[in-house]
Image 1 (cartoon, helix red, strand yellow):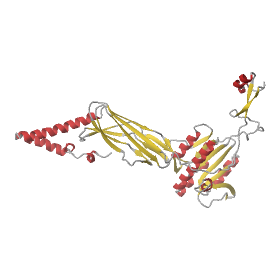
Image 2 (spheres, helix red, strand yellow; image 1 turned 180 degrees about the vertical axis):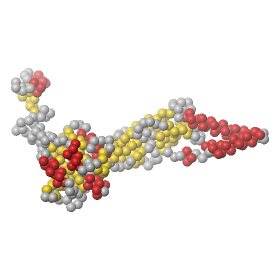
Image 3 (cartoon, helix red, strand yellow; image 1 turned 60 degrees about the vertical axis):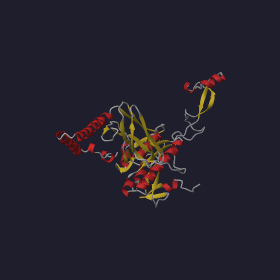
Image 4 (cartoon, rainbow, N blue to C red; image 1 turned 135 degrees about the horizontal axis):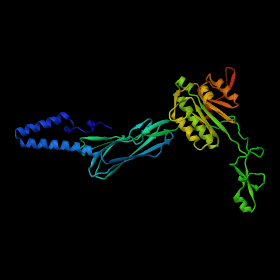
Length: 398
């Protein structure tokens, strides 16, 4: 918000000139100068009245701010609506500013400072549209309010104890090719040969058999056929994918662009696999403020949102070696596959390959950088590697 000196240029707000006006009043009274005394008294009355007016202007002034969304993707728009109300008989001058941090750009290029006059019991609306430029966590509001007299001589700022609205911008989603990574099916492939049945997928009904549990009875079908019917389930196949982001090589090479590109690929892969019904998990050794760095493999409805939020909060600062995190605080169940995103070919890959191979977890590396081949050999260990360019659909690709 512009400073008060920038908004108004008046003798009423300069203490030295106020003292000079008072001195002229004393001189006028001593010399019985009626006209000068009237002018100086009028100036002092306006000055004192405007100051008292500004002090009372903040009383009964209320504001409400609303953001249409708190989670978005890059290039999406945020709409902020602020309503101010003067709930008293005294008219006021209102100055309002919407503080914004981070890569949120105003779309209409209108400044974030506005001012208006509010008469008694009058309302005013202010609207801003912002464009989410890049991934991150940003803050909007609360609006800063200053009220004053209608002359604009003095102002009073209203203090707010409310916390700013937090806006989470997820990584940009990019089109990906189908990745043929090795899978471990927990129950086996769907089909009649599988001994394990999934109670979610119902293939049909049949006559109830006494050895079957009563919870499998299909009551509606039984009433329709006038005899007990039981549900026939389809054997399930559960794909479990564990995503790993190794921040150490990105920080060591100061590869900010490659880091953002890798996070876009991770987010896009997570969305693609979630649409296919995969159970997902995530681990990173980067600094994550306000979100967990380790998410166990799960099929819950909030898992994808949690993964995207962790990626949005992830910073290119490492908390330690990735292998130490895997050994200390991570537990894995049987039947998962793993994909590790890194920067170029890293010397820690053989240790990671050995860690997951010992637990019979198939693993594949996706690297950012040049000089990477599909079968990379490091210290005698063969690692299955793909590049970001190989999995991303470039412009012009069919």
